[in-house]
Length: 68
Image (cartoon, rainbow, N blue to C red; front, side, top):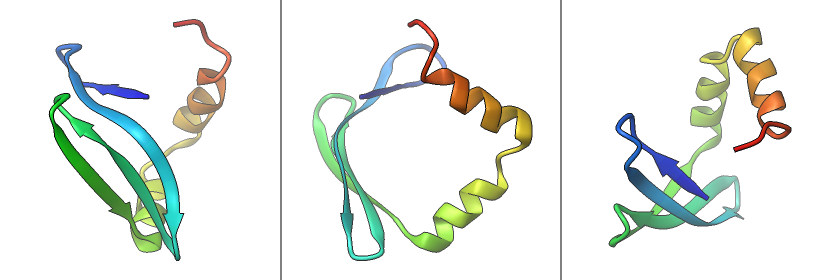
């Protein structure tokens, strides 16, 4: 999976999403060169959910069925 910036340049290539206890682990490469491991703690995941409104949640669900 790849994440892109506002200028459509590749920011990060995610190679693995896993679990380590109560933490979500995201592994990948930033800018195609620098390896990185990011951790998402439960309290940060709850904070992220507070940023979503109904319209964005519906968009996220529909995103799986859209063409690229």
